[in-house]
Length: 160
Image (cartoon, rainbow, N blue to C red; front, side, top):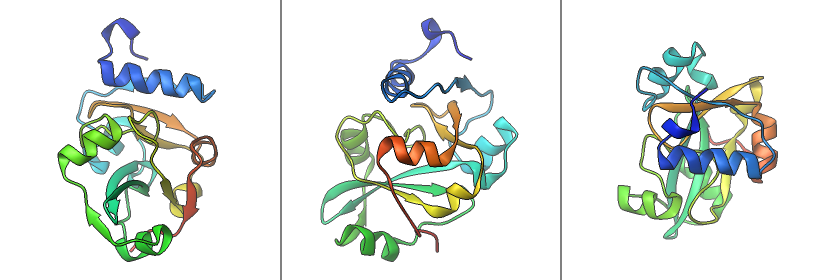
């Protein structure tokens, strides 16, 4: 666990969001970058499928968050069917504006704006998943069904 005095502001925001949601999740710092699903899996000793990719897209220009298993690719047509809009990629500025975090460290909660969240059903096949905690080198473990419930995510099929 990281001493809060040594946490970056982004990670402190995630820690506060976890506490506010009633989640007792420990944020850890990894030596390797967790910027990719493969890197995160290696760093925490998990499978790639246990890594939560937090992906921001635009649905008719409105930011949405998709939580996808690290072993899957997001199917934008399936996301479009869920949102009811046309899906496009969000650039780095739009991601930071919507979430308050930079790409590579986007957590599933504690965002700057209230984003609709869509969670790929494949994440729920695991007992524990690992999600970014505000920076590319911080993560936390959580039961995926608990995470989806607490953040109000719509669980659906998003995988290609």
